Structures are given as structure tokens and as C-alpha cells.
Amino acid sequence: MRNIAGNIQINLLEMIKRADLVTDEFEITSQPVNKASNKDGAFTIPQRYRKMENLHILFWLLKDISWCMIWRELGLAMIIPTLTIAIVITIRTRRYMSEFCHNLAVVFWIIANSYWMISEFFVFDSYPVHFYDFSYKDVTFIPFSIGILVLAFYYLWWKPRNKDLIETM
Image (cartoon, rainbow, N blue to C red):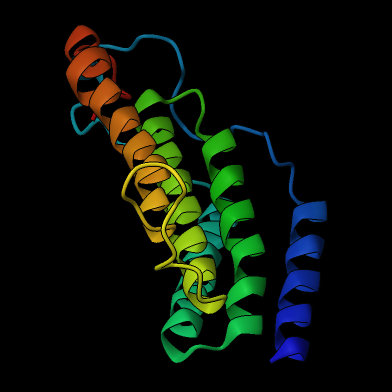
């Protein structure tokens, strides 16, 4: 398991070295655009970005399968590429509010999910937190809630005020 995790991390580092992490190459402008001029409101994602997103799904699944099967080393190792790629995707979509907010919520979801996994791997998930009547697993409520707040901001505040932008989905 350790060798597999090490190889995956080395491949991830090579991929990050080759990619420009903050380049925005989407075929949509960040300027306000009337939806009527682009009837389907679509934009395309470059091939290398799509490959990274697909690899992100693989890492996430490996992390969760490792959690399910109690493969501690692989599960812990998969946190790094899963979270790193989620952050990179979020940075790349920062100019498109819909994509940015959803991807930021995913980052917080992965943080909460990873903490929960760690708390179960190291068997402190059911220990009580010294304040209130919560367990350490219940602390995951914080990053999960931050993700919900990011999406609430988008759907309840930003989207209603920016209906004419093509990036508002």
C-alpha cells in the first residue's frame, strides 16, 4: 500500500510541475455577457483540465474506498492529492462565480470528509470534545457548514443579483 501511495504522489507532483496551476483557459470571458448572445450558456474545459478533474475523482474514490476497507496508509496518502487537486480546480475557476463557489464547497467537503476519516482511523471519533456535548467526529460539522454557507451565498445573494451573466448557472 505504501508503495502505491508513494507512486501516486510522485505522479501528482510531476503533473503539477507540468501544469500552470492558475491559468484560466476556459472559452468564456469574465466580463458580463448577455445570455441571449450565447443561447446554451456553455463553456468548454481544456483537455488537460478535464484530465485533472477526472484524476481528482479517482483519488477521491481511492481515499473513500481506503476508508471503507480500513487501509489507513493509502487513505491518509490519498488526502494530499485529493485535496490538492480540489484546491487547484478551485483556483482555476476563481473568475467564474458559479464554478468557484461549487468547487470551494467541494474543498470544504473533502476537508470535513478527511478529518472524519482520520478520526475513525485513529479511533478518537467518539471521544467527547471538552466543550459542549459533541464528539470529535461532530467537529466535521464546521467545514461541512462552511461549504453550505458558500453555496447559500451563491444561490441566495450572488446569483439573484447577477442573472444576466453567462457564468450564472
